[in-house]
Image 1 (spheres, each protein chain N blue to C red):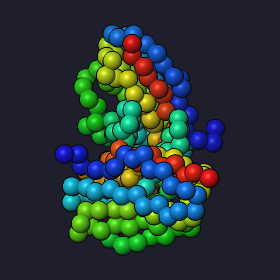
Image 2 (cartoon, each protein chain N blue to C red):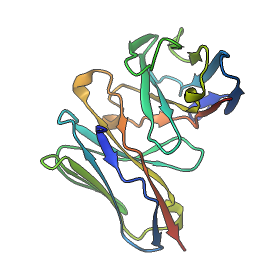
Image 3 (spheres, each protein chain N blue to C red):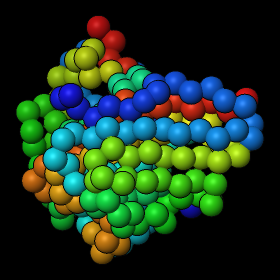
Length: 117
Length: 113
């Protein structure tokens, strides 16, 4: 595809359930970021991958959140024992390099809107 | 206090007006400054980036950075209804390693025809 895609676009789940959110970055992009955007707020950093490894996971709020990128392309954000406070739009972004604003654009996907009832 | 402060608005202006959007920040380590535009139910898209104090112009958009005051601005000239969106300022501390973006809350702009 031409851009970053995220699936599902919407996810409704019940408190306590497990969810997986998927991000397909632009082909060839080595840097991948996950952000969370709550209503009326700007995106907040969660985790950064360079290739297959999580180079910075300092933004993950607690150990219920985990993300993987096993082959250096598609990434999955996993949330265990979901809570109502997890409700937000989860955004994925990719760029050719980590210094994306210098020479390249950091492309954001449309996000997955997660609602925890 | 949040690291990046941005008035959420909403801001409503007539078509053709000059729009001024602003952010302040508290972390002196921020070195790169960006403005993103976000349409409803879409991801943010990069409009402009700047490094160090000064002005940068791109068409109808001008970005200003004043590091001494920890203040950045985005000006939109001859605003159009298609400019109606939420504008997010974002900053990077490259010394942090991951080059993660720290965003403001966003300002919702409506340009009325």
